[in-house]
Image (cartoon, rainbow, N blue to C red; front, side, top):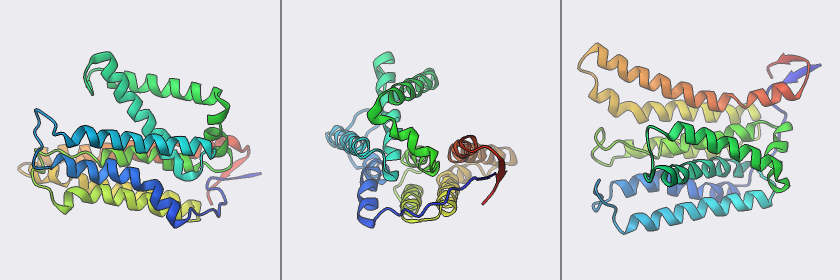
Length: 257
């Protein structure tokens, strides 16, 4: 018996559903970048717009997650689950350290939140389809973990890019286009490829300002290159890892299709 690493799929998310499902990530992506470059932006204090923005972003993600649970986790809903874990990590970090993000503790808290989330959602019948759906097609999990790409590209170092330009917004927009293409494509191979390629291109553009500031010497250039390769490696590993679901679900000789 052979194994098909890429499952035979033909489902395609309708345009309306695909665009609507990505609206919250447009808010948390390009919307968050625009907010950070707002004229009222001040590193020492948030404007009145910021708390309202956070409420809208969190509420939209929560609504999408609830709808995904009620509909037994269709493909479009998987990034909502991952974003939910990210939000829980921020909340747990704030609750423990009284800071939104503590560089000394976030990794431990992240692993703790992820582990508890897996245990709880697996034991609750209404959330178990998140896992059972993957026995037929692991690619929704790659799409779900692509939320880490959406989240990363929504951040921007204003020391490297002090002025808002199209180049600043481009990585986030590329990530959203990759997500949209994934939902619209019927081929599992094409879905997988578009996530990987959009991540590679977006990460390269995302680090261009760093390269621009480190061209003074070979050592600084290699340092920037090492950072880019690290980002590529981490994000690619997240997208690639769900292939193992397909491998372990089917005994036999592995064959790439």
